[in-house]
Image (cartoon, rainbow, N blue to C red; front, side, top):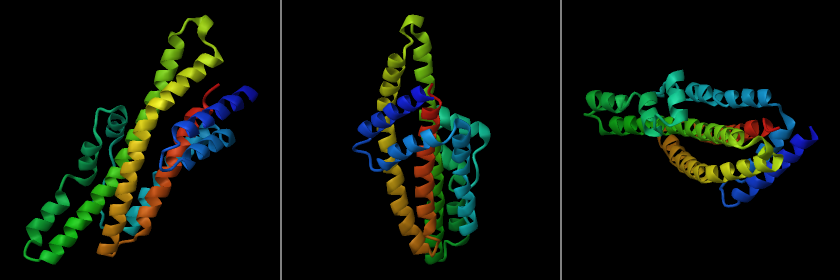
Length: 229
């Protein structure tokens, strides 16, 4: 237990250092705190619970044209076989709302403009789901890479120091992708907030997504950190 806490403390330090220029550095500290407080099983439950924010969104915005990815497509997204853009198209049905608007409301410019904005809202929300899937997939890949490289070492070299070195390299490699994902989420939240105001939607949807993304990201990091022995 003591060794596990020492390793987690080292991981917290690494995350803070590599995340020094990240927009939401607090997530790195939160991840370390969660890793020390909760078991991997409890953290996995918290990660799954983050998806409930989209159930709340559908209640707040009942006319939203948004569907779930199938388990197979979720796996493809996480593994990189499906891009975020492809996932968005799957979740929004392509441009189904826009096509409907152009077919039945083309004679009314105001209704058409509203329908286009609502379609854009659905696309932005779908993209946040896709980006979350991509980020979790990259972290899972990081963990697999560390395990594979560690097992490939001669038995005499499988030391705690070697494991920490592998973890450090993997986290450094993942940090750039995290910063990119953070930047995209921030931009989406800004545009989403504007569109919700313009269409009379519930602006709290944007803050709900931001909070869920931040917690899920921290919980996912903590999940992998807490599994280190």
